[in-house]
Each structure stands twice: as C-alpha cells, then as structure tokens.
Length: 234
Image (tube, rainbow, N blue to C red; front, top):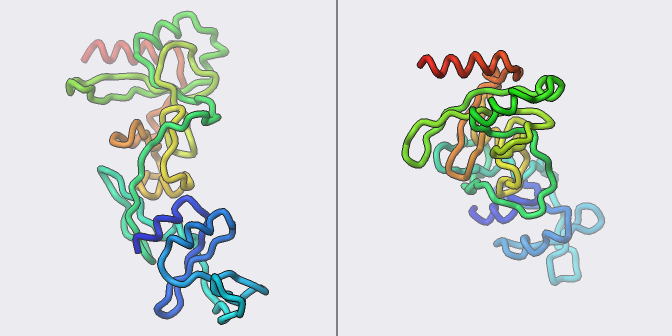
C-alpha cells in the first residue's frame, strides 16, 4: 500500500468495497499520480459510469461507496514519536521541516537571549510591551550545556536580534519553514499527539518539544525583573 503516499499532498479520497480499494481525485492536474499507481484506471462519465483509460465503451458503474479523505488514512512518522494506529490503511510517511523560498508570512513569535530582551524592555514604550506575552525556555546547545532563552509571542515583536518564529494553529516553527508534506495543521497536531493545553514547538526536523500554554504570561518589566532575579538566586 506504499503507493498511497503518492497522494499525500492532494485532496484525493479513498473508499473500500469488498476486496477492492478505490481512489478518487477531483483535479486533472493529479492524473499523473493515478497513472503511477497500480490497478485499473478509469474516468467517471455521466455521474457514476466507469470508462477504462484508453477505451471508448463504458465498462461498469461505480458502486455506492463511503468516501473518506485519503490523508486521514496515512500515518506520519518522525524521529522521536509516532501517531497511534488509526482505522483503515496506515502508510508511513516521514514528516520534516523544509525552508520554502518566497513563503509569504510574518513573524508573530521570537526566541530571544535574556540579556537582549532585558535591554529592549529597559527603553521600550509601554504600548509596545503590553501586546506581548512570554515564557522561559531551556534547551541544550551543541556542547550539551543548558541554555535559557525567552520565547515572546505577539505583534509587533521587539525589534532586536532573535530567532523569528511563526505560530500556525497550535504549532510554532521557524519563519520561512513549513512542514512537508503540506498537510493540514490539525493532522500535524494529531501526529505529534499535542496535548490540548500545549503548543508544539518544532525547531527543526530532528528537534521538537511541547510547551504548556499556562506558562505563557503577559510580558512586563516587573515580571521580567522577577524572572532575572529568580535565575540569579539559583
């Protein structure tokens, strides 16, 4: 059933009748994918009549079928975790992040050095600060040293050096990147099994983590000073 992955980036539908699997596409631009798949290939004429590719006489009628989006029958695999099996035909498909040149989107989150964000807060107008929220993130660098940074969410972001991010549904990823295959955000969240109270922070194809939304608080000078003081006392 590996051929099903050919249709991961399409709106194809799938159905089953007795010992047969049916795939239906709605766009002629995807016909070349049908030609690459095994089995018999048909055109639908007059609603439900099946005309075999290369033939001139209708061969049969399409039976009444329960059509489902084919994407719902794919399992998307990634390095650390995997989605639990679902009903239907489950086909592995590797998920990854890919830089897309010319992707038109704006940053609505950023990952900042604590000192950089602190310097910006010292002189930033209050009207700029009150639209933002933030939390503390920890991760290991290449030398396995623990690093702490501030994740800031909102617009407009502080205009200082940072790793620009964008939030899509409950997913945070680097600006200019998108997941491959280009499936719906809901399917990504289901594949990673993102908890209802969390965001998925997808740093790279090999690195991701969950972030509880309750940890994200309104940004203010006072709260950030308390954070810095707490870190100094540790």
